Image 1: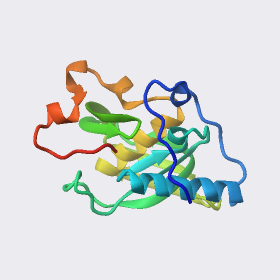
Image 2: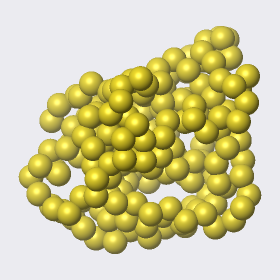
Image 3: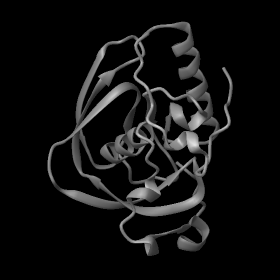
Length: 177
């Protein structure tokens, strides 16, 4: 019911490991999820982790229907994922450009597993168990990294592949994920 401020890189809270959720279906969890949805929508993001708005819980939301920043990306279902566990399904990695609401105006080339299984719970405590690939797998890995205090620049192999979006991609109207 509120758009929250998104913490930016440099804030120590983004580097902490988030705590598991145990009270599914609570009013507090529902309010958090609504605030996360409102914040992600207001920022035109494709995902958001609770630590990005200063809440140290293992909660992420993500989803993409159509997004002008990712015209070639497949649809990723709107998902609430709580207490996630990620399991790579292959050793194959792929580098791709990422941005982040917590690292505004910048992009970096980040290696990610191309295929993975993720498990966790939805907001009611029901089990989620999906095997995914491509952009869907990238988004899940990016958001779940926030739960362990990892920002995407920490995964960049070559810092020459990190910079301001308007310099790296002149003429493109990129906003942050």
